[in-house]
Image 1 (tube, rainbow, N blue to C red):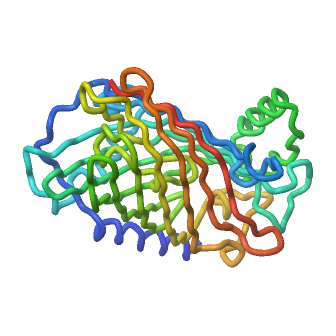
Image 2: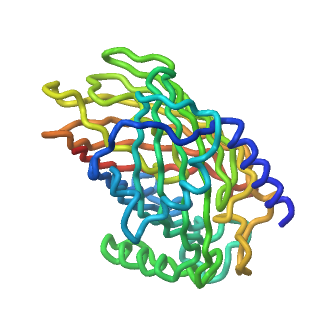
Length: 348
């Protein structure tokens, strides 16, 4: 476990070097700026196999409401990040907040086996809450994002959810959930800090990059590239599909230009990640029936995605895209991960 602690400390140190922020005089944020629904599923992948990142669902609420209410953890995020130095006071700064509630499920290739498949990834699940703050500095063409996620690994509910879905669609029964990582439940957390930089911006296309570090249930550093082309009405900082840990991270809802034609564009993204540790593959503190050792996982990962976004009515946007990730594990069962995603976003 010493390797895990050292890697997390290194990532936290790198976070401070990549992007730091302090309290600023930001433009006023409305209480409710919108919502977003993310649905991921690998049912569309080749051979219709239900494996790896088998699916996820998340709901995001945006606006200053993300900082209030009993079911949010923004005070903790703020305590960790809001007083970091370096970010100049600027009246033009835009501050936006969001809170995301979600779950993600993972299975090996053979979901019918009742015994652990030791040369494949373990069953795993995460149910979580994630609070995010986005600080946009227009004069610098930069957007800083800080986030805090808290969740539970290994809940029995994961197997119940998949069993219900498989019964509805007539798919094979998954029998290995008793062997999942941290079976019975274990708390987990993750800190995120990133900076997004606008590289180019025109009427019909946008290009941006990002640098990010995470410390917690996924401890990693990563860099991404985002591109979109078409009829664009929303600001560049509201678009960042390369910012994801399986399911897309909490997004900021942004209204399009008043009186403009409905937004309609194609997009693509790419991400390269060096992962030091993953609790979803290697377990955490609680004993698990099956986890992988550090030398059984791939630490250097690449991902790509491509899709299309269409606006319907008044700031209701629907996105469809496909994402692929290089193999997370080594050995005879090493394989790429592919899944399809549906995103519905409404901005107020």
